[in-house]
Length: 441
Image 1 (spheres, rainbow, N blue to C red):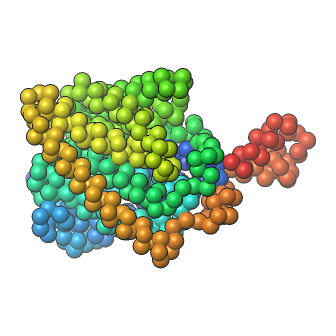
Image 2 (image 1 turned 120 degrees about the vertical axis):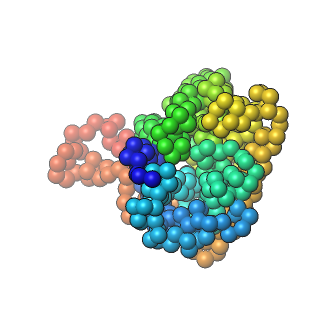
Image 3 (image 1 turned 135 degrees about the vertical axis):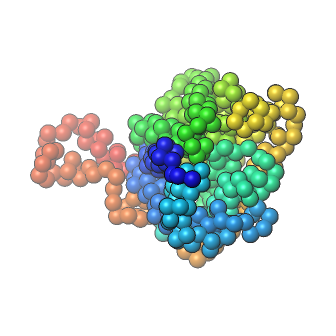
């Protein structure tokens, strides 16, 4: 079969959109960090391009999509070693070169590991994070990707017939579970929850959320692997679910706190995107709106669980990704419509509870595996390298302690020098106070 330029163009565009989600996530998390931790947080997210991107070429793709070694649990790690057997132009499926699919799935792997970083803000050694991310991608993400994304052999996708169009289980439930385990093993930040640890730059958070929403169209619609009806269907549902999720989150804030916040709107965006990810090709637009609204409400409540249960999930990876992923995965069992591309009926369309049970089994299996293996990895890294920075670095700022850098340079405002702001006398008192507060925050 000849290569299809239209399909190739669609997949390369979708791949680029999913890659954009990584810097979007870095901005989303970075804005929520304190000013003394912003660079470290963004570095933790961006570093997954280095660690996971390299592993994906060497053996990650093989472990995820190689010939099954038995039971739908793992692909053959050596089958596509260094991708050498996929580089010929003739290696293609339905007009799409296999290397285009390799690139597309690489973006998923990179982003998923980056999601976990949001639970470890302000206190994890950067070198330990790098080692953790290498081990976690190898031992957790690649096997689960095989379960969910290998439609021919994976035990979740092929064996039990669970619906997960774009990664609600493999990406969001998986990352959310790992985030919960990691923040528990790490321990709480100094002063949490007694001291306020507010986001230092909400405009950055909003920008990051917007980039995530834009990139998510590649994530969901691109998972159709061709510019067809399924891609269109997933695209529309991704829009409407996110819109209603914002509404749900802001309504809860207004009722509970008396104010609707920009952080709530940004978090609602992500919650809706997470929840519709597994369901985007399985439900009607009305079902997508319902799922988004439920996710907005559910995740808005769930982010408060960390205060009740005592785990310091810095940027609510658990409340948004684990809970949102669970809601989206399970609600397929209620809202799935057999006229959709997935061709399965849920409870509300006369399909009974069978699909709901299948969805629940997939979610529980991912939680169990991810939780146990993540705990083992975290304790091993902790024993060998240590996970936390020292108390001084945590107090002064992890940016300076781990990277010898600062996200914001206020030295010229305080000490003089050449250029703009060189004279202290030109600054008003409020400006000087603001600069100092930003440095210490």
